[in-house]
Length: 490
Image (cartoon, rainbow, N blue to C red; front, side, top):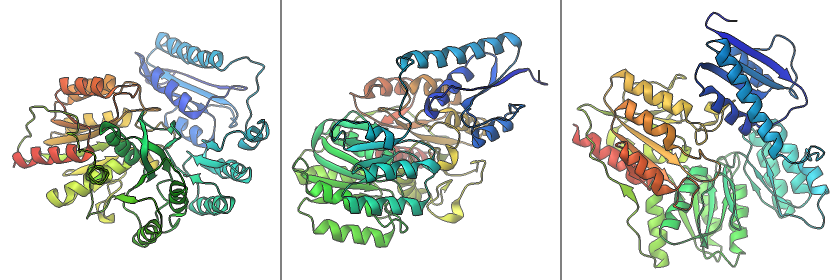
């Protein structure tokens, strides 16, 4: 019993589930009536700290191999129903996992050792960052390329892995590589796009998704999307994986052109990569964001024209929106690259834009992510995903921010991205549409996806338009539309 209700806190041994699945269970149960807080997670030090902050810390000692189930509710009935829902969700997962006697292999090395013959050419590592390096090193030692989905890998370890991979003739994608498509196989967050002649080297997950979806809309497919991790084009890493990926595409007969997608790279690294690209036989087209080239859609259009492909009219759903006098831009983004693109386009028009990932250090937001004036928040930034699912899976933080903006009374135009595809929220409009209607603010949505995605681009776009939002397949077009609304309000 607590001052505000009742709680259940237990530790269970011999139970394991991956963090994304447990976050989904926590989210689903927290939506039940009468439930005030839920944390279902492995009892790691970080998760125990989160539980303590929620007032749900276990009384006895805990170890990371135990499952923590912590729930608070308004009364005994709601609590019992919530705990039963947790049990049902965990039991459903166990039934789906196969025969009880099947013992899963726990490491990449063990998995590769159990393969007959050569086995696959690619390993995927998705464990906490402090454990990812050893798993990736095992894959490299076995002669496999590796996608490191994990974040939290120290940059010096990333450099060491990429140098070892280069020497071994394989590729390290990552760390913090959220998107890849290899020979038609989608890994991480990726969209259902057609196969074709364009290869993407991407130091950006949502940037790669935007570009690949626009290409698909234009009738042009991709050969592979090789994510290299958001830090690869930093001065510290020096483009090690980008250079290796470009060499792989140069040797790939299925790739006729390459598009290099990234957030703003380190200037010296950009020069080195451009010089290396000029030596290749396959043409390499830039799609690296900068103040001079802030538009991924324009980069795709330039590539299409070079290929002799007509640039289509990018899909959109117009809306009769009007902004109140003195309105400001409030950007609520799940994709870091899309947030950067929006700021690069908006800043020359609006002036300073505050952000948790600012264009200039002096524009950094405080830890509460709240400020008056023009603001763009990247909710996918690593600092905001500790202990919780990415906002492409769990929209909670963004929806809370939307409600705060509406309650503040500050006139605003809301600019958001919704990214579809594998791994993302299976139906993002189910929670976003009621939130937009409740907020009552003019909203512009960049909807990144394809018709073939599980969520369906048109179905999501129609629902958003019915809620009064203007919807664009292009994030750059969405941003410019939001700027037009702000300009008309002045």
